[in-house]
Length: 224
Image 1 (cartoon, rainbow, N blue to C red):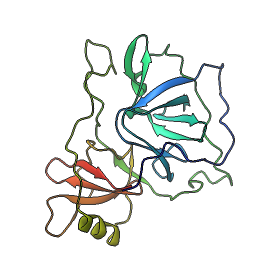
Image 2 (cartoon, rainbow, N blue to C red; image 1 turned 180 degrees about the vertical axis):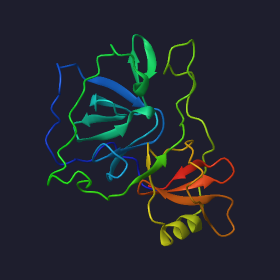
Image 3 (spheres, one colour; image 1 turned 30 degrees about the vertical axis):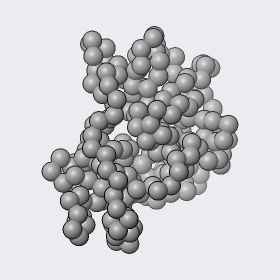
Image 4 (cartoon, rainbow, N blue to C red; image 1 turned 120 degrees about the vertical axis):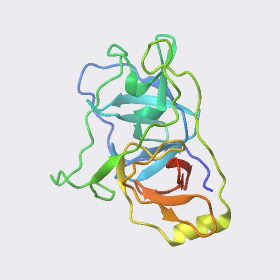
């Protein structure tokens, strides 16, 4: 299993803010969270934020859950359903932040070439649905997005023979809006593949093999 590193260097200039300048915001990952080269599931993974790890939020795309984060070692994009920030003295899911939270709106990266269907540096493919839920905890006290608990869901450590089988029999990727994290669910239209003599199934979600509990269709392990 690869060691979790924060962010390797991602080529490209810093994103320009589209509105007034805001202060950068400290955020934390609620689960092990992919950092991608661009704002979408088709972009390649360039790093991982470990559960509880903090980073700096530069801003989010307008009307999108994809946000830009930066560290001295690099910059990338993360899905804001799995980020929290201290807003008004409460830990709030970044996706559900209040309008006056002071988080900047940033411009999308330049894809280059003018082909709006292509993803620079990554694969292409239609979005086949959306990942369901995730380990962010329940809202409490009527305040949307306030964290009441930690990550949820079964977490496993598959044996080496399972890793070997999955990597040797990789399926074509299925692209879903959201991010592949432990505890998130897959829609019914996504086919799960069997692993010999093993209780869990697998599928390639957004370019990453994941192990899935077949009854609940919840992700129990992400292969990195």
